[in-house]
Image (cartoon, rainbow over all chains, first blue to last red; front, top):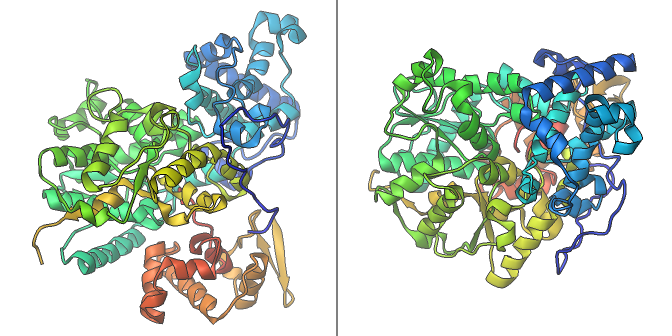
Length: 513
Length: 111
């Protein structure tokens, strides 16, 4: 790609707070969505010519969000500037720009909130750090709210539990409401509505790609493992990010999903209607988009008559599925309204709905229904990167922390060599890959590389100490981001892969020929 | 937004340098797009670009990386049917860079 050369920052021997570099990334600006992208989503095509109109619309939307989300109002009011979050953001660590400190990212909005929504800020703005919403402030929001991956690491350290991701989401929602959307996310959302997935992969291409996979797996294993699409009456509907059909190394995990179902004798299908697990409606903080995208899964489940809904390796999809599908789609237990009951009558109550593919695989392993040749993974020395939305936005299994244990249990069941990275960089304190939350776009490569710094430091340690040569993860964004940024730090691009890629390597499929 | 001007023809590109209209593409435009990517086009590069365009015409999407490597392997021999070969030709990745040169829209999503 043309443009200034992007360089990775040097790894630090002792991770300390970086020296401040004010405005280091003030000019970072991802592409703005065109009218053609904005309008089909119901957003204004562009900023109004008259600033006052934009101003009023932004403040109006902010007021609505403060009314609708009590959390946002609490987050605006509660911060005491204690400083616990300052050095917890990977983008701050990588760029040194003080506005990438979580508290500063929050203050971009808090200062405006105080001016328009608090008595003190209305009367004595200078005394309470309140400021008018100006065009410059709005540009600053655009720049810095698109330098946040909504990973929520900072919220783990906040004594008040302030969730910067939710403030970023509100910021992006207000920007969309005034016609200042991001090209990358909004173009993708439009494709989901038009074609069914983030890639824009139409049904016939999906079927062609998967029948090619069936041939490949047959060549490799001699077994007729199937990768079906739109098969009515299948027991399981598997919803996975569309990157799993398209990209490397993602597709290796897709192969693994099919092998697991094959070996366990479970009938399953993909859906061309719900050929996307990802839901960028969450990234832009827009409930209507979140809802509309999630509805496709409900529709597919009803049409196909499946008994179980399983989600593939996608971080934020699992947060959406685990935390929001219940009310968005009626998938999940508990509700007794007609909308929820319609699907609950159909789904098998003996299984967790929805389930993560790792939960399915781990259950099968525990039941002794899968056999592995662990030595098939002996060329790999594996570590595991916890993806933020799985780590901090969801759970697996039936106890807190199951989302950390289950993927590791699977890895240890299929591979002999496993080493965790440093404890302060995994589990609930995991560092973002640097590309999550709608930041995975080429023009943001500089901050993507810089934001990966703390993860790369932790990886370097286990590479040096334990000879790790494979970093497994369960998120399409993590896989794509690491494939691109690993080489900037001197690692091989192919070092990242999926948990079900490891499963795929070791699984024994029986004697079918 | 920009334009590519060659042989008296002027075609529109988007902010990332991808062609706005697929039908504007011809080999000369492909050559110009390659120059902007610092890719020196050889016969091997054109093989890939032409396959991408054929596949796109059939399916309205670029082929998955695996589909592409398999097709190239069949055409040019198994030693070239791997993503390493494609990355040598198109260092920024066959999906995005080769698509751009082929005049196809940028693949989007978590890739």
